[in-house]
Amino acid sequence: MTTPRNSIVAAPGDALQAWMAFQREWADAYVYSALVRLSRRAETLSDDPALADRLVPLRIGVMGSATVDFILPVLKGALMARGVRPTMLAAPYGHVSMSLLDHHSVLAQFQPQVTVVIHAAPHLPDLPELTATPAEVQRCVDATCEKLLEPCGIFHSRTGSEIVLSNFHPLPWRAAGNVGARLPGDPISFVNRLNMALSERAPRYVHILDVASLANRIGVANWFDERYWYLAKQPMSFNAVPLFSRNLAAVIGSLVGRGRKCIAVDLDNTLWGGVIGDDGLSGIQLGEGSPEGESFKAFQMYLRELKDRGILLAACSKNDETVARSPFLEHPEMVLRLDDFAAFKANWSPKSENLRALSAELNLPLDAFVFIDDNPAEREEVARAVPEVAVASLPDDPAGYVRALDGQFYFETVALSEEDLRRTATYQARRQSQETLAATTDLDGYLASLQMVASVDQFLPESFERVTQLINKTNQFNLTTPRLLRADVERMAWDASMVTRAVRLRDRFGDHGLISVLFGRIENRCLLLDAWLMSCRVLGRGVEALLFNDLLRTAERAGITELIGFYRPTDRNAMVKDHYGKLGFVQEAVENGVERWRLSVARACPIDTHVSVRHDTEPAA
Image 1 (cartoon, rainbow, N blue to C red):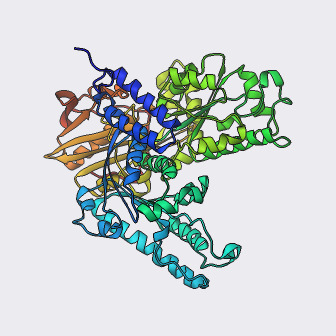
Image 2: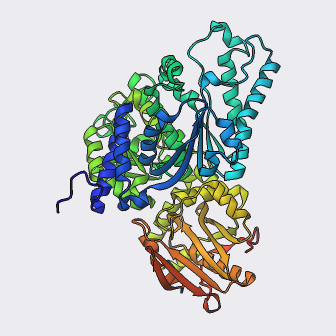
Image 3: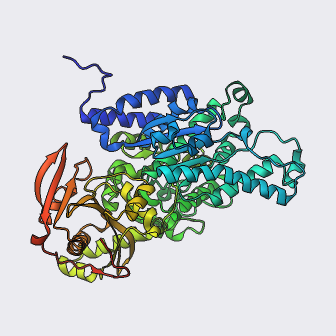
Protein backbone atom coordinates (compact mmCIF):
# COMPACT_ATOMS: atom_id res chain seq x y z
CA MET A 1 0.00 0.00 0.00
CA THR A 2 1.38 3.42 -0.94
CA THR A 3 1.33 6.14 1.70
CA PRO A 4 -0.04 9.46 0.34
CA ARG A 5 2.44 12.32 0.23
CA ASN A 6 0.33 14.39 2.63
CA SER A 7 -0.22 11.61 5.15
CA ILE A 8 0.61 12.42 8.76
CA VAL A 9 2.20 8.99 9.09
CA ALA A 10 5.85 9.53 8.25
CA ALA A 11 9.24 8.21 9.10
CA PRO A 12 10.79 10.10 12.04
CA GLY A 13 13.28 11.87 9.78
CA ASP A 14 10.53 12.86 7.34
CA ALA A 15 8.35 14.22 10.15
CA LEU A 16 11.23 16.27 11.55
CA GLN A 17 12.14 17.68 8.14
CA ALA A 18 8.50 18.57 7.47
CA TRP A 19 8.30 20.29 10.84
CA MET A 20 11.43 22.32 10.25
CA ALA A 21 10.15 23.29 6.82
CA PHE A 22 6.97 24.55 8.52
CA GLN A 23 9.04 26.61 10.98
CA ARG A 24 11.05 28.20 8.15
CA GLU A 25 7.90 29.05 6.20
CA TRP A 26 6.29 30.46 9.31
CA ALA A 27 9.25 32.74 9.95
CA ASP A 28 8.83 34.37 6.52
CA ALA A 29 5.00 34.60 6.43
CA TYR A 30 3.23 37.74 7.62
CA VAL A 31 -0.16 37.61 5.87
CA TYR A 32 -3.10 36.53 8.04
CA SER A 33 -4.62 34.08 5.56
CA ALA A 34 -1.27 32.42 4.83
CA LEU A 35 -0.58 32.01 8.53
CA VAL A 36 -3.97 30.39 9.10
CA ARG A 37 -3.18 27.82 6.39
CA LEU A 38 0.27 27.15 7.87
CA SER A 39 -1.28 26.76 11.30
CA ARG A 40 -3.61 24.05 10.04
CA ARG A 41 -0.68 22.23 8.46
CA ALA A 42 1.27 22.42 11.71
CA GLU A 43 -1.65 21.01 13.67
CA THR A 44 -1.72 18.00 11.36
CA LEU A 45 2.04 17.52 11.52
CA SER A 46 2.10 17.81 15.31
CA ASP A 47 0.13 14.56 15.64
CA ASP A 48 3.21 12.62 14.57
CA PRO A 49 4.76 10.78 17.57
CA ALA A 50 8.23 11.60 16.23
CA LEU A 51 7.66 15.23 17.27
CA ALA A 52 6.45 14.50 20.80
CA ASP A 53 9.69 15.59 22.47
CA ARG A 54 9.85 18.82 20.49
CA LEU A 55 6.46 20.18 21.57
CA VAL A 56 5.54 21.07 25.14
CA PRO A 57 1.82 20.47 25.79
CA LEU A 58 0.19 23.47 27.44
CA ARG A 59 -3.38 24.36 28.38
CA ILE A 60 -3.98 28.00 27.47
CA GLY A 61 -7.06 30.05 28.22
CA VAL A 62 -7.69 33.18 26.17
CA MET A 63 -10.18 35.93 26.99
CA GLY A 64 -10.74 39.54 26.23
CA SER A 65 -12.83 42.62 26.74
CA ALA A 66 -13.29 42.39 22.97
CA THR A 67 -13.45 39.65 20.32
CA VAL A 68 -10.49 37.25 20.41
CA ASP A 69 -11.64 34.26 18.33
CA PHE A 70 -10.14 35.58 15.09
CA ILE A 71 -6.69 35.66 16.75
CA LEU A 72 -6.69 32.01 17.87
CA PRO A 73 -5.87 30.24 14.56
CA VAL A 74 -2.73 32.33 14.02
CA LEU A 75 -1.78 32.21 17.70
CA LYS A 76 -1.97 28.42 17.62
CA GLY A 77 0.45 28.28 14.70
CA ALA A 78 2.79 30.79 16.34
CA LEU A 79 2.86 28.68 19.50
CA MET A 80 3.62 25.49 17.59
CA ALA A 81 6.41 27.25 15.71
CA ARG A 82 7.83 28.08 19.16
CA GLY A 83 7.68 24.45 20.29
CA VAL A 84 4.43 24.60 22.26
CA ARG A 85 1.47 22.33 21.49
CA PRO A 86 -1.51 24.26 22.85
CA THR A 87 -4.91 23.08 23.99
CA MET A 88 -6.84 26.33 23.88
CA LEU A 89 -10.08 27.57 25.38
CA ALA A 90 -11.62 30.93 24.58
CA ALA A 91 -13.69 32.35 27.43
CA PRO A 92 -16.97 34.11 26.59
CA TYR A 93 -16.57 37.52 24.99
CA GLY A 94 -16.40 40.43 27.42
CA HIS A 95 -16.62 38.32 30.61
CA VAL A 96 -13.08 38.88 31.84
CA SER A 97 -13.71 39.58 35.53
CA MET A 98 -16.54 37.05 35.77
CA SER A 99 -14.42 34.27 34.22
CA LEU A 100 -11.52 35.03 36.55
CA LEU A 101 -13.53 35.42 39.75
CA ASP A 102 -16.14 32.67 39.39
CA HIS A 103 -14.64 29.33 40.39
CA HIS A 104 -17.47 27.60 38.45
CA SER A 105 -16.68 29.44 35.20
CA VAL A 106 -15.77 27.49 32.07
CA LEU A 107 -12.28 28.94 32.30
CA ALA A 108 -11.80 27.89 35.93
CA GLN A 109 -12.99 24.37 35.15
CA PHE A 110 -10.51 24.21 32.26
CA GLN A 111 -7.64 24.89 34.73
CA PRO A 112 -5.35 26.65 32.24
CA GLN A 113 -1.64 26.63 32.90
CA VAL A 114 -1.39 29.99 31.12
CA THR A 115 -4.20 32.53 30.87
CA VAL A 116 -4.10 35.34 28.31
CA VAL A 117 -6.15 38.48 29.00
CA ILE A 118 -6.47 40.82 26.00
CA HIS A 119 -7.86 44.26 26.73
CA ALA A 120 -9.24 46.67 24.15
CA ALA A 121 -8.23 50.32 24.26
CA PRO A 122 -11.79 51.66 23.61
CA HIS A 123 -13.01 49.68 26.65
CA LEU A 124 -10.47 51.24 28.98
CA PRO A 125 -12.31 51.85 32.26
CA ASP A 126 -12.30 54.95 34.44
CA LEU A 127 -10.81 57.51 32.08
CA PRO A 128 -10.23 60.81 33.91
CA GLU A 129 -11.66 64.11 32.81
CA LEU A 130 -9.44 66.02 30.41
CA THR A 131 -8.98 68.79 33.01
CA ALA A 132 -8.32 66.39 35.91
CA THR A 133 -5.59 67.28 38.37
CA PRO A 134 -2.50 65.08 38.71
CA ALA A 135 -3.90 63.70 42.00
CA GLU A 136 -7.23 62.81 40.34
CA VAL A 137 -5.39 61.12 37.46
CA GLN A 138 -3.30 59.12 39.92
CA ARG A 139 -6.48 57.94 41.67
CA CYS A 140 -7.78 56.77 38.29
CA VAL A 141 -4.52 54.93 37.61
CA ASP A 142 -4.68 53.25 41.03
CA ALA A 143 -8.31 52.21 40.60
CA THR A 144 -7.72 50.84 37.11
CA CYS A 145 -4.67 48.85 38.16
CA GLU A 146 -6.64 47.32 41.03
CA LYS A 147 -9.56 46.50 38.74
CA LEU A 148 -7.26 44.76 36.25
CA LEU A 149 -4.85 43.00 38.63
CA GLU A 150 -7.04 41.90 41.55
CA PRO A 151 -9.06 39.32 39.53
CA CYS A 152 -5.77 37.97 38.16
CA GLY A 153 -4.51 37.41 41.70
CA ILE A 154 -7.66 35.58 42.76
CA PHE A 155 -7.61 33.36 39.68
CA HIS A 156 -3.92 32.55 40.14
CA SER A 157 -4.46 31.61 43.79
CA ARG A 158 -7.14 29.11 42.72
CA THR A 159 -5.47 27.62 39.64
CA GLY A 160 -1.75 28.45 39.76
CA SER A 161 -2.09 29.77 36.22
CA GLU A 162 0.52 32.14 34.84
CA ILE A 163 -1.23 35.18 33.41
CA VAL A 164 -0.26 37.21 30.35
CA LEU A 165 -2.01 40.58 30.52
CA SER A 166 -2.02 43.03 27.65
CA ASN A 167 -1.49 46.69 28.32
CA PHE A 168 -3.12 49.46 26.26
CA HIS A 169 -2.16 51.28 23.10
CA PRO A 170 -3.40 54.86 22.69
CA LEU A 171 -6.21 55.46 20.24
CA PRO A 172 -5.14 57.04 16.91
CA TRP A 173 -6.69 60.43 17.59
CA ARG A 174 -6.18 63.23 20.11
CA ALA A 175 -8.97 65.76 20.57
CA ALA A 176 -6.75 68.03 22.67
CA GLY A 177 -4.08 68.12 19.98
CA ASN A 178 -0.51 68.90 21.02
CA VAL A 179 -1.58 70.59 24.22
CA GLY A 180 -2.72 67.16 25.41
CA ALA A 181 0.90 66.34 26.16
CA ARG A 182 0.70 68.96 28.95
CA LEU A 183 -2.58 67.65 30.42
CA PRO A 184 -2.42 64.73 32.90
CA GLY A 185 -6.04 63.87 32.07
CA ASP A 186 -5.44 63.59 28.32
CA PRO A 187 -6.28 59.99 27.22
CA ILE A 188 -2.87 59.36 25.66
CA SER A 189 -1.06 60.76 28.69
CA PHE A 190 -3.27 58.63 30.95
CA VAL A 191 -2.59 55.44 28.95
CA ASN A 192 1.16 56.03 29.23
CA ARG A 193 0.90 56.45 33.02
CA LEU A 194 -1.34 53.42 33.34
CA ASN A 195 0.96 51.18 31.32
CA MET A 196 3.92 52.17 33.47
CA ALA A 197 1.96 51.50 36.66
CA LEU A 198 0.81 48.08 35.42
CA SER A 199 4.41 47.07 34.69
CA GLU A 200 5.57 48.24 38.11
CA ARG A 201 2.71 46.67 40.10
CA ALA A 202 2.17 43.39 38.27
CA PRO A 203 3.01 40.47 40.58
CA ARG A 204 5.57 37.96 39.37
CA TYR A 205 2.88 35.63 37.93
CA VAL A 206 1.42 38.40 35.74
CA HIS A 207 3.46 39.03 32.60
CA ILE A 208 2.70 42.25 30.75
CA LEU A 209 2.28 41.88 26.99
CA ASP A 210 3.43 45.27 25.73
CA VAL A 211 0.74 45.94 23.13
CA ALA A 212 1.56 49.65 23.25
CA SER A 213 5.08 48.90 22.01
CA LEU A 214 3.82 46.51 19.34
CA ALA A 215 1.32 49.07 18.04
CA ASN A 216 4.09 51.65 17.83
CA ARG A 217 6.09 49.34 15.57
CA ILE A 218 3.55 49.51 12.77
CA GLY A 219 1.72 52.66 13.81
CA VAL A 220 -1.42 52.84 15.93
CA ALA A 221 -3.49 53.76 12.85
CA ASN A 222 -2.44 50.46 11.24
CA TRP A 223 -2.89 48.47 14.44
CA PHE A 224 -6.40 49.65 15.31
CA ASP A 225 -9.05 49.79 12.57
CA GLU A 226 -12.30 51.51 13.56
CA ARG A 227 -14.26 49.56 10.93
CA TYR A 228 -13.43 46.21 12.53
CA TRP A 229 -14.07 47.64 15.97
CA TYR A 230 -17.56 48.89 15.20
CA LEU A 231 -18.41 45.85 13.07
CA ALA A 232 -17.08 43.02 15.27
CA LYS A 233 -15.40 44.56 18.35
CA GLN A 234 -11.97 43.43 17.14
CA PRO A 235 -9.24 45.01 19.29
CA MET A 236 -6.80 45.01 16.37
CA SER A 237 -6.79 44.82 12.58
CA PHE A 238 -6.09 41.60 10.68
CA ASN A 239 -2.76 43.11 9.64
CA ALA A 240 -1.76 43.39 13.31
CA VAL A 241 -2.58 39.77 14.21
CA PRO A 242 0.71 38.24 12.91
CA LEU A 243 2.89 40.60 14.96
CA PHE A 244 0.67 40.25 18.03
CA SER A 245 0.56 36.44 17.81
CA ARG A 246 4.30 36.05 17.30
CA ASN A 247 5.08 38.21 20.31
CA LEU A 248 2.46 36.55 22.52
CA ALA A 249 3.73 33.10 21.49
CA ALA A 250 7.28 34.18 22.33
CA VAL A 251 6.19 35.26 25.83
CA ILE A 252 4.28 32.01 26.44
CA GLY A 253 7.13 29.98 24.98
CA SER A 254 9.60 31.63 27.34
CA LEU A 255 7.53 30.36 30.29
CA VAL A 256 8.44 26.80 29.28
CA GLY A 257 11.98 27.45 28.08
CA ARG A 258 11.22 27.77 24.37
CA GLY A 259 13.67 30.52 23.47
CA ARG A 260 17.02 30.76 21.70
CA LYS A 261 20.18 31.12 23.78
CA CYS A 262 23.03 32.00 21.44
CA ILE A 263 23.64 34.30 18.46
CA ALA A 264 26.20 32.98 15.98
CA VAL A 265 27.16 36.07 14.01
CA ASP A 266 29.19 36.57 10.85
CA LEU A 267 31.76 39.40 10.84
CA ASP A 268 32.48 40.94 7.40
CA ASN A 269 29.54 43.05 6.21
CA THR A 270 27.58 41.96 9.29
CA LEU A 271 29.38 43.59 12.21
CA TRP A 272 31.19 46.07 9.97
CA GLY A 273 31.07 47.14 6.36
CA GLY A 274 33.67 45.64 4.05
CA VAL A 275 36.05 42.70 4.27
CA ILE A 276 38.73 43.04 6.93
CA GLY A 277 41.14 40.76 5.06
CA ASP A 278 40.98 42.92 1.93
CA ASP A 279 40.18 46.41 3.21
CA GLY A 280 42.24 46.45 6.40
CA LEU A 281 41.37 48.26 9.62
CA SER A 282 41.23 51.68 8.01
CA GLY A 283 39.09 50.47 5.12
CA ILE A 284 36.15 48.88 6.90
CA GLN A 285 32.99 50.93 7.56
CA LEU A 286 32.30 51.24 11.28
CA GLY A 287 31.27 54.10 13.53
CA GLU A 288 30.78 57.80 13.07
CA GLY A 289 31.41 59.48 9.75
CA SER A 290 29.21 57.47 7.39
CA PRO A 291 25.60 56.24 7.43
CA GLU A 292 26.77 52.68 6.80
CA GLY A 293 29.37 52.83 9.59
CA GLU A 294 26.84 54.20 12.07
CA SER A 295 24.39 51.43 11.12
CA PHE A 296 26.93 48.72 11.93
CA LYS A 297 27.85 50.41 15.18
CA ALA A 298 24.17 50.55 16.19
CA PHE A 299 23.83 46.84 15.39
CA GLN A 300 26.82 46.03 17.59
CA MET A 301 25.30 48.08 20.41
CA TYR A 302 22.07 46.08 20.10
CA LEU A 303 23.97 42.78 20.19
CA ARG A 304 25.85 43.94 23.28
CA GLU A 305 22.54 44.72 24.98
CA LEU A 306 21.40 41.17 24.23
CA LYS A 307 24.67 39.83 25.63
CA ASP A 308 24.28 41.90 28.79
CA ARG A 309 20.86 40.33 29.47
CA GLY A 310 22.12 36.77 29.06
CA ILE A 311 22.20 35.89 25.37
CA LEU A 312 25.50 34.30 24.32
CA LEU A 313 27.44 35.68 21.35
CA ALA A 314 29.60 33.48 19.14
CA ALA A 315 31.59 34.55 16.09
CA CYS A 316 31.10 32.39 12.99
CA SER A 317 33.17 33.72 10.10
CA LYS A 318 34.99 32.58 6.98
CA ASN A 319 38.26 34.31 7.67
CA ASP A 320 41.78 34.00 8.89
CA GLU A 321 41.42 33.96 12.67
CA THR A 322 44.20 36.45 13.43
CA VAL A 323 42.81 38.88 10.86
CA ALA A 324 39.24 38.36 12.09
CA ARG A 325 40.23 39.20 15.66
CA SER A 326 42.11 42.37 14.78
CA PRO A 327 39.13 44.81 14.67
CA PHE A 328 38.09 43.70 18.17
CA LEU A 329 41.57 44.47 19.43
CA GLU A 330 42.53 47.55 17.43
CA HIS A 331 39.59 49.39 15.83
CA PRO A 332 38.68 52.48 17.92
CA GLU A 333 34.97 52.40 16.99
CA MET A 334 34.46 48.73 17.83
CA VAL A 335 31.64 48.32 20.37
CA LEU A 336 31.95 44.56 20.84
CA ARG A 337 35.18 43.16 22.25
CA LEU A 338 36.55 39.64 22.32
CA ASP A 339 35.46 39.15 25.92
CA ASP A 340 31.86 39.71 24.81
CA PHE A 341 32.01 36.40 22.92
CA ALA A 342 31.54 33.00 24.51
CA ALA A 343 33.21 31.35 21.48
CA PHE A 344 35.03 32.45 18.33
CA LYS A 345 35.21 30.47 15.08
CA ALA A 346 37.05 32.04 12.13
CA ASN A 347 38.29 29.65 9.44
CA TRP A 348 37.43 28.55 5.91
CA SER A 349 35.06 25.72 6.79
CA PRO A 350 31.37 25.85 5.84
CA LYS A 351 29.35 27.87 8.31
CA SER A 352 27.20 24.82 9.09
CA GLU A 353 30.30 22.91 10.22
CA ASN A 354 31.33 25.78 12.44
CA LEU A 355 27.85 25.89 13.96
CA ARG A 356 28.13 22.21 14.82
CA ALA A 357 31.53 22.91 16.35
CA LEU A 358 30.08 25.81 18.37
CA SER A 359 27.28 23.55 19.54
CA ALA A 360 29.82 21.02 20.81
CA GLU A 361 32.08 23.66 22.38
CA LEU A 362 29.29 25.44 24.23
CA ASN A 363 27.36 22.26 25.02
CA LEU A 364 24.23 23.77 23.49
CA PRO A 365 21.86 22.02 21.08
CA LEU A 366 21.67 23.43 17.57
CA ASP A 367 18.12 24.61 18.17
CA ALA A 368 19.50 27.05 20.76
CA PHE A 369 21.26 29.06 18.02
CA VAL A 370 20.25 32.00 15.84
CA PHE A 371 22.52 32.52 12.84
CA ILE A 372 23.09 36.04 11.48
CA ASP A 373 24.84 36.62 8.17
CA ASP A 374 24.48 39.31 5.51
CA ASN A 375 25.09 36.78 2.69
CA PRO A 376 21.92 35.01 1.44
CA ALA A 377 24.00 32.12 0.10
CA GLU A 378 25.52 31.49 3.54
CA ARG A 379 22.08 31.71 5.15
CA GLU A 380 20.75 29.17 2.66
CA GLU A 381 23.66 26.78 3.27
CA VAL A 382 23.02 26.84 7.01
CA ALA A 383 19.25 26.50 6.61
CA ARG A 384 19.70 23.37 4.50
CA ALA A 385 22.56 21.75 6.42
CA VAL A 386 21.48 22.50 10.00
CA PRO A 387 17.74 23.22 9.88
CA GLU A 388 17.52 23.23 13.69
CA VAL A 389 19.31 26.59 13.69
CA ALA A 390 17.11 29.66 13.30
CA VAL A 391 18.40 31.71 10.37
CA ALA A 392 17.53 35.37 10.83
CA SER A 393 16.28 37.26 7.79
CA LEU A 394 18.23 40.46 7.19
CA PRO A 395 17.57 43.30 4.75
CA ASP A 396 20.22 44.44 2.29
CA ASP A 397 20.64 47.76 4.11
CA PRO A 398 22.46 47.42 7.47
CA ALA A 399 20.33 50.27 8.80
CA GLY A 400 17.54 47.68 9.06
CA TYR A 401 19.51 44.98 10.89
CA VAL A 402 18.42 45.93 14.41
CA ARG A 403 14.74 46.18 13.57
CA ALA A 404 14.81 42.94 11.58
CA LEU A 405 16.38 40.90 14.39
CA ASP A 406 14.35 42.55 17.13
CA GLY A 407 11.09 41.89 15.29
CA GLN A 408 11.63 38.13 15.18
CA PHE A 409 11.30 37.79 19.00
CA TYR A 410 13.90 35.03 19.33
CA PHE A 411 15.01 36.07 22.80
CA GLU A 412 11.82 36.93 24.67
CA THR A 413 11.92 36.27 28.42
CA VAL A 414 9.59 36.92 31.33
CA ALA A 415 12.33 37.43 33.93
CA LEU A 416 16.09 37.80 34.29
CA SER A 417 18.01 35.69 36.77
CA GLU A 418 21.47 36.32 38.18
CA GLU A 419 22.71 33.46 36.01
CA ASP A 420 21.38 35.23 32.91
CA LEU A 421 23.28 38.41 33.70
CA ARG A 422 26.61 36.65 34.11
CA ARG A 423 26.17 33.94 31.47
CA THR A 424 28.98 35.05 29.15
CA ALA A 425 31.45 35.23 32.05
CA THR A 426 30.35 31.75 33.13
CA TYR A 427 31.03 30.29 29.70
CA GLN A 428 34.39 32.02 29.54
CA ALA A 429 35.30 30.49 32.90
CA ARG A 430 34.19 27.12 31.55
CA ARG A 431 36.47 27.59 28.54
CA GLN A 432 39.39 28.33 30.85
CA SER A 433 38.75 25.15 32.79
CA GLN A 434 38.52 23.14 29.55
CA GLU A 435 41.84 24.55 28.39
CA THR A 436 43.36 23.52 31.72
CA LEU A 437 41.87 20.04 31.34
CA ALA A 438 43.26 19.69 27.80
CA ALA A 439 46.75 20.41 29.12
CA THR A 440 46.66 17.79 31.88
CA THR A 441 47.00 14.02 31.92
CA ASP A 442 45.90 13.67 35.55
CA LEU A 443 42.10 13.95 35.66
CA ASP A 444 41.92 13.40 39.41
CA GLY A 445 44.50 16.10 40.01
CA TYR A 446 42.70 18.43 37.62
CA LEU A 447 39.37 18.05 39.46
CA ALA A 448 41.08 18.66 42.79
CA SER A 449 42.77 21.77 41.38
CA LEU A 450 39.41 23.32 40.47
CA GLN A 451 38.69 23.90 44.17
CA MET A 452 34.97 23.29 43.64
CA VAL A 453 32.53 24.33 46.35
CA ALA A 454 28.79 23.68 46.11
CA SER A 455 25.71 24.58 48.12
CA VAL A 456 22.78 22.15 48.21
CA ASP A 457 19.46 23.69 49.24
CA GLN A 458 15.77 23.07 49.02
CA PHE A 459 13.85 25.14 46.45
CA LEU A 460 13.92 28.60 48.02
CA PRO A 461 11.86 31.64 46.94
CA GLU A 462 14.94 33.46 45.69
CA SER A 463 15.77 30.55 43.39
CA PHE A 464 12.26 29.75 42.05
CA GLU A 465 12.86 31.67 38.81
CA ARG A 466 16.20 30.01 38.03
CA VAL A 467 14.94 26.53 39.02
CA THR A 468 12.01 26.93 36.62
CA GLN A 469 14.34 28.17 33.90
CA LEU A 470 16.76 25.27 34.33
CA ILE A 471 13.96 22.67 34.33
CA ASN A 472 12.59 23.99 31.07
CA LYS A 473 15.85 24.62 29.21
CA THR A 474 17.91 21.55 30.09
CA ASN A 475 17.68 18.73 27.55
CA GLN A 476 20.82 16.59 27.67
CA PHE A 477 21.55 15.76 31.31
CA ASN A 478 17.85 15.41 32.11
CA LEU A 479 16.45 12.05 33.15
CA THR A 480 12.74 12.74 32.53
CA THR A 481 12.60 16.18 30.78
CA PRO A 482 9.61 17.64 32.66
CA ARG A 483 8.35 21.07 31.59
CA LEU A 484 6.95 23.10 34.47
CA LEU A 485 5.77 26.58 35.26
CA ARG A 486 6.94 28.60 38.23
CA ALA A 487 3.68 27.85 40.05
CA ASP A 488 4.55 24.14 39.89
CA VAL A 489 7.96 24.83 41.42
CA GLU A 490 6.38 26.86 44.22
CA ARG A 491 3.86 24.12 45.00
CA MET A 492 6.65 21.57 45.30
CA ALA A 493 8.66 23.88 47.56
CA TRP A 494 5.85 24.04 50.13
CA ASP A 495 4.72 20.40 49.82
CA ALA A 496 5.92 18.39 52.83
CA SER A 497 5.77 15.16 50.82
CA MET A 498 8.28 16.47 48.28
CA VAL A 499 12.07 16.44 48.38
CA THR A 500 13.55 19.30 46.37
CA ARG A 501 17.20 20.14 45.75
CA ALA A 502 18.95 22.97 43.93
CA VAL A 503 22.74 22.96 43.61
CA ARG A 504 24.98 25.98 43.12
CA LEU A 505 28.65 25.60 42.17
CA ARG A 506 31.79 27.73 42.25
CA ASP A 507 35.35 26.90 41.30
CA ARG A 508 38.59 28.85 41.07
CA PHE A 509 37.61 30.15 37.63
CA GLY A 510 34.29 31.65 38.70
CA ASP A 511 30.72 31.22 39.92
CA HIS A 512 28.59 28.87 37.81
CA GLY A 513 25.39 29.71 39.69
CA LEU A 514 22.50 27.27 40.08
CA ILE A 515 23.41 24.31 37.87
CA SER A 516 21.48 21.24 39.04
CA VAL A 517 17.94 20.45 40.14
CA LEU A 518 16.36 17.34 41.61
CA PHE A 519 12.89 16.69 42.99
CA GLY A 520 10.91 13.66 44.09
CA ARG A 521 8.03 12.54 46.29
CA ILE A 522 7.98 10.34 49.37
CA GLU A 523 5.55 7.42 49.21
CA ASN A 524 5.53 4.43 51.58
CA ARG A 525 9.12 5.01 52.74
CA CYS A 526 10.29 5.27 49.11
CA LEU A 527 11.63 8.40 47.45
CA LEU A 528 10.45 8.52 43.83
CA LEU A 529 12.82 10.74 41.85
CA ASP A 530 10.58 12.52 39.36
CA ALA A 531 13.36 14.66 37.90
CA TRP A 532 17.14 14.95 38.00
CA LEU A 533 18.85 17.41 35.70
CA MET A 534 22.06 19.39 35.38
CA SER A 535 23.58 22.04 33.17
CA CYS A 536 25.96 20.48 30.67
CA ARG A 537 28.61 23.10 31.31
CA VAL A 538 29.62 21.29 34.51
CA LEU A 539 29.52 17.71 33.25
CA GLY A 540 32.14 15.36 34.62
CA ARG A 541 32.83 17.48 37.71
CA GLY A 542 31.30 15.08 40.26
CA VAL A 543 28.22 17.19 41.03
CA GLU A 544 25.95 14.19 40.44
CA ALA A 545 27.91 12.22 43.05
CA LEU A 546 27.54 15.09 45.50
CA LEU A 547 23.78 15.12 44.97
CA PHE A 548 23.55 11.34 45.27
CA ASN A 549 25.37 11.49 48.60
CA ASP A 550 22.93 14.16 49.75
CA LEU A 551 20.04 11.87 48.81
CA LEU A 552 21.47 9.09 50.97
CA ARG A 553 21.76 11.46 53.95
CA THR A 554 18.22 12.67 53.34
CA ALA A 555 16.93 9.08 53.20
CA GLU A 556 18.65 8.22 56.47
CA ARG A 557 17.12 11.22 58.28
CA ALA A 558 13.62 10.67 56.86
CA GLY A 559 13.45 6.89 57.27
CA ILE A 560 13.40 6.29 53.51
CA THR A 561 14.43 2.74 52.65
CA GLU A 562 14.49 2.83 48.84
CA LEU A 563 15.23 5.29 46.06
CA ILE A 564 13.31 4.85 42.81
CA GLY A 565 14.49 6.69 39.71
CA PHE A 566 12.94 7.11 36.27
CA TYR A 567 14.51 7.55 32.87
CA ARG A 568 12.43 8.66 29.88
CA PRO A 569 14.56 8.45 26.70
CA THR A 570 14.40 11.36 24.26
CA ASP A 571 16.39 12.22 21.15
CA ARG A 572 18.68 14.43 23.30
CA ASN A 573 19.29 12.75 26.67
CA ALA A 574 21.13 9.58 25.66
CA MET A 575 24.11 10.73 27.74
CA VAL A 576 22.23 9.83 30.94
CA LYS A 577 20.77 6.48 29.90
CA ASP A 578 23.18 4.68 32.30
CA HIS A 579 23.00 7.31 35.04
CA TYR A 580 21.12 5.23 37.60
CA GLY A 581 23.03 2.08 36.74
CA LYS A 582 26.33 3.83 37.49
CA LEU A 583 24.98 4.83 40.90
CA GLY A 584 24.11 1.23 41.78
CA PHE A 585 20.40 1.25 40.93
CA VAL A 586 18.89 -1.87 39.35
CA GLN A 587 16.45 -1.58 36.46
CA GLU A 588 13.21 -3.30 37.36
CA ALA A 589 10.64 -2.31 34.74
CA VAL A 590 9.93 -0.43 31.54
CA GLU A 591 6.44 1.00 31.14
CA ASN A 592 5.35 3.14 28.16
CA GLY A 593 9.00 3.60 27.30
CA VAL A 594 9.93 4.90 30.79
CA GLU A 595 12.54 2.90 32.67
CA ARG A 596 12.12 2.38 36.42
CA TRP A 597 15.26 1.88 38.57
CA ARG A 598 15.47 0.90 42.27
CA LEU A 599 18.16 1.17 44.94
CA SER A 600 18.08 -0.12 48.52
CA VAL A 601 19.39 2.66 50.73
CA ALA A 602 20.88 0.13 53.15
CA ARG A 603 23.08 -1.29 50.40
CA ALA A 604 24.14 2.06 48.89
CA CYS A 605 27.50 3.65 49.48
CA PRO A 606 28.48 7.33 49.16
CA ILE A 607 30.66 8.23 46.19
CA ASP A 608 33.93 10.12 46.47
CA THR A 609 33.88 13.54 44.84
CA HIS A 610 36.18 16.55 44.68
CA VAL A 611 33.24 18.91 45.23
CA SER A 612 33.07 20.17 48.79
CA VAL A 613 29.83 21.42 50.34
CA ARG A 614 29.16 24.86 51.76
CA HIS A 615 26.56 24.42 54.49
CA ASP A 616 24.76 27.77 54.37
CA THR A 617 21.48 26.01 55.07
CA GLU A 618 20.92 22.41 56.03
CA PRO A 619 18.58 20.68 53.55
CA ALA A 620 15.69 18.84 55.10
CA ALA A 621 13.57 16.01 53.78
